[in-house]
Length: 262
Ligand SMILES: [Ca+2]
Image 1: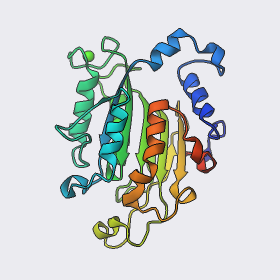
Image 2: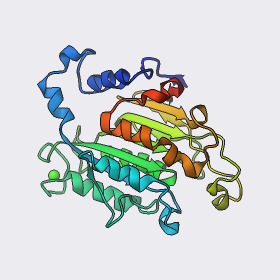
Image 3: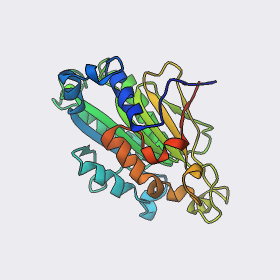
Image 4: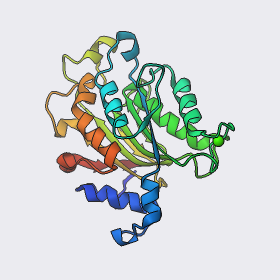
């Protein structure tokens, strides 16, 4: 186990440099030419996935508003009918809808003949684990050409599933921000569905050969009394900033840590 030491998380500039590195640049804005600018301006798609009981109970816990606020910034939101996010038990439906959105020429493949698209993913609780699966599936899908299955940015909000000890971040995701709480409050609504145990966001582990960067924020360091069911509201501004600028959220820079590497 190791921690990626070259990650810069102390300022928004950190992720800007990260992005330039991802895009194949060296490390300075002098290399940020028209080609990279066009890549940043490419079509942006957002897929969101909810927690396990959220669809049943009607609780979106702030996720719908977050996803639609990003949509208003020019992102194409992959909707599940009228819902701005997919239910946790419909990972296949979410994946298929994403694939169809990326397959712009409708030939059953995602490759260089489709419109260039930057994929963005958001998942809360159970949906956060699903979202990491979706990122992994996209890069491994035989219908996806090499180089066309990457994810530009992913935000995981207290990702949790029973029987998962940790959260594996796929190497195909360039920028990952993980917001989680490590000490569930006594009155948190997750107690009702976990025999009183309460949910805590899983610790992310990034593949040591990952191409991108992963930032881990324990919300206990930036807020008080955060429970599992309040994570989306607490982290919504940070997530919005991450997705729309691809930069770190400066107010929480002191709490940001590089994800542990496998
Ligand atoms: Ca296609």
